[in-house]
Length: 437
Ligand SMILES: [Zn+2]
Ligand SMILES: [Zn+2]
Image (cartoon, rainbow, N blue to C red):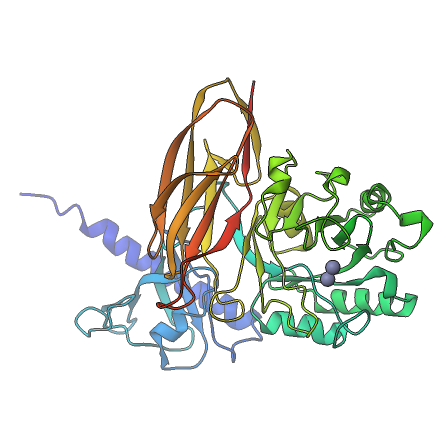
């Protein structure tokens, strides 16, 4: 007689799941004060199963309940009826009753949920993608609105981090205090990160936008003899754990940037403005972009995407310091274009540098998901397009490259704002630099 090997483990699993759900639901009821808002607790990670519990109204549509998971979409879910011991099931995009017979969730109902593999696994394990805007103004310098409105609007625009960067030279002590106070009051690490910062606005060297993890005594003003050169600004950043990036750097000062005063440690990135000149000159600078809003609309224009360990001030600053970021323009509407892009050369992530013997072959790989409007991806090496791929709706594209001199390689994405509009570049990723030994 054949042994029925499957039965005991399955019964055990069902029992364990049921017990786990009871314990988990009890823990939530005992500790949660947010039950009214409706949230799925313990959402799964991409490609993994998790025991999740719906914490919200009885009879909530299953799809709506699963959509409360942030940063992951649920691909499939199973739930067992404690009375009948019957399992019901749900599959994303398959609403037919014979496919998905788990239609609604009741408060404290447990489900086994599977996270969708929609987004690429980041090339550095443990990183997540966050969106932000690191440059904008209020009425404290030359724009509209107040710092409190600025951070509220940033959050409303659905981005993860924002810096308020009024022109340092126009700020008085009370205004600087208020900027820092509002940044601290808006900070909710894990959910939203707000930075107090300023724009060091030199007509001689160009504008630099600075931001800080903690409160600092006052902004560094380019019309103050203590702070009137890029090197003095970098020293100020060193003393206060701050970072800066080059604002609107295209061309020469007063509008553009004097690249001879570059510092990779304290000004590791620049707003991308369609110009590879700093790369051609040998400056190793990462790419980001920002709205430079003057109408209290941070997060509503061009954006920065960063791969960070955590949505904290420290996490975002670490990502910026390591140039694990890319620049994205708007498409069709404010903040509407948010492709997920991962990029490596020989496994090293965007923003990194490494060495190989002359004429070695390296492999560049770019993965794009999350934005159906993407049509093509191009790889640029030392100012020349060396490869391109159709990337409609997302792709993974790899190219073997022979490296004969110190080189930079970066991908850019092409899309259309509408079907009848021309194809245009809309995202640029921080390069990887390969040194030849
Ligand atoms: Zn400026
Ligand atoms: Zn500005």
